Length: 495
Image (cartoon, rainbow, N blue to C red; front, side):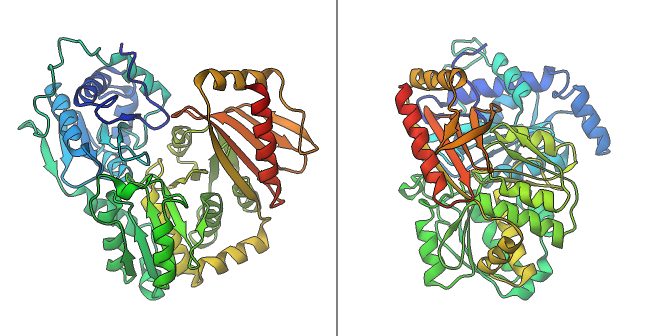
């Protein structure tokens, strides 16, 4: 069992050439290979995978794994290392020729009834960070059981099975198959979800920002094919990500805001480099939070696409989604932070939407994991179907629902400080915040202090960095900042 390779909420991630090397990827691939060949439920001979294939009417003779990579350095070369290691363990491997968005890899796994996919991606991290995601047969990120199984199978760095260094770095084993048809099939799938007739009639002008990532091969082609005028930026290759932290948040989308305003576009859409999260800019150049976009999309899906079912969201996601669900008679379920918990619910087929506040969105009748490409195109779909601007749709939306305001901050702390903070909050939680009594404490993930009247403050440790994250929401526009300020005082008093 390896002690130095541990998965976070969305795979393994580390600094390139430090925690993440060719040998690290090789070791991970060996651990994944053993998982595929031996796990009694999620493996190729496992009961879960076999049942899944039977439901799809397929009987694969050999385990098939897709391998993809994002646009950063050296994702493609590391993907080849993973592919070679998988092949050496008797697994059929198809490697994408073009940079591959994670949701497209997930769609391919479902479409081909593959046992899984490896994607080399740093997602929204800085350019010098990279990582490995394992997608299981159900078309979503690995759950806790899968992660624990893979981690215990990863060979140590001095294992005899490993080469001193990956001598095949940058080249592929002859048994590996290159494939370029994943993009075409995925875009055809989107055409069944998006109202393309409305797009062609809309005369919309959309600005796109792939943030130097994998969306560059998807946004423009799909939109222009269906009559949308497109202006783009950051569609070129840049392993430094233009000096940006490519997270599709307001800071990274400053240039997209300018493009939307200067070119008088109706909307700006963006994805992080592996397209699992999204960002939206309205016609006036304002970044619109996912906490607003997702509830508006849920309203759109229910009214215009007649979807019915349940809704789920992470514990620190806006209660605005709850309002829409309740108004439409939809049951809502809350999950811990980490989209893998939402994915588990989406795989049941009972949920029409799963959402997290950081820009992850899953929709029924698609993959059960977050898809930033689809989320962006659904916003375009909403504008085209309604024949209105996002500002007008937002105005109509708040005639039906109470507007909520939120704020989020991240505070660097040492591991010792983080542990001390969480222990103290568990033993001596605050009984009031901003002169309002704490009505209930939710400890699903960290601590969420719910106040009388519906406002709340959440304090939790980051699962990927040494940070304490604080979130607040309220109907009063000024209250979230006040709650965050009081939360900081509480933390400071502990450490």
